Image (cartoon, rainbow, N blue to C red):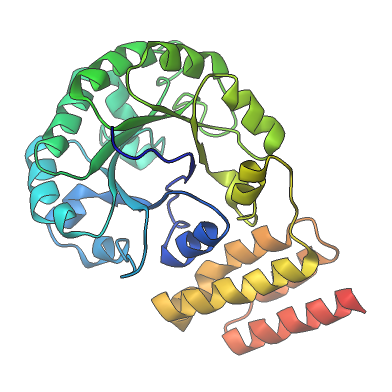
Amino acid sequence: MKKMYKFIMAPLAGITDRAFREIVKEYGADLTFTEMVNVKGLYYKDEKTFRLVDIGEDEKNVGIQIFGRDIEIIKKVTYDYLNTLAVDVIDFNFGCPAPKIFKNNEGSALLKEPKLMGDIIKAIKENTDKMVSSKIRIGIDRDLLNYMEVLESLEDAAPDFITVHARTRKGYYHEDVNYEAIKKMVEKSTIPIVANGGIFDIETLKKQEETGAKSFMVARGALGNPLIFRSLKEGKNLRLSFDERMDLIFKHYRKMIEYKGERLALFEMRKHIAWYLKGLKSSNKIKNEINNEKSIERVFELLDKYRNNQEN
């Protein structure tokens, strides 16, 4: 059996770039993923798509998540390109609920086609020696909870692990997590099940542990709080101090500048700053000021001023 990871950072569009992955890895994430990548973009050598696959030379325990539905394109991209990447895992997304992807019969729309899901995993496995995994939801909506049928098809394809986001496509991220579904899959499956959905602290981790799962994927719980991985490993809820949050903002910002340049860093760091500062005194005011700034130097000045005002 290949190596299994216990605490995994979920692939998140617009978030899990190289800078973010390096930070959560420092705080204890056992495995991270790139943002979700369109196999057609790779096949047709789209420049924007390739930018999503920025993997550091020294980056360890990282996977790439792909999506699509065309078997021949998936085979070719896997053999010709994915095999050349310094990634440990190739994950296929069968769970993305985004309307644009769903309308193209990709992402979570593939839950309606369990046989094709299995065929896709087989196609990837036939063309790589890397670990192969799949990420699913439990159904399109509560009237179509076909996760056990999906599990049967995937088991026949034999990925190295299956991540289950225990919500439906219709439920997006606000639906209650269906722990019972994960429990049923864990009991039935001969393949490791990674439990995903609603992990924000030790208490919510315990709910997922009760399903019998041994590996867990964290998503929104890590936004502004990479310390969550250390918390989960140590079994106690840890909190970043004010100074630690501020230090992280500057560290994250500098990594973003290094990997993406100042222009993109200026815009993409806005959301991260909002997450880091969430709940802090007078944070709304500085977030609004930063969102209107067009100069990184000025943003740093505002952050320094905010820090000094809070400390005095």
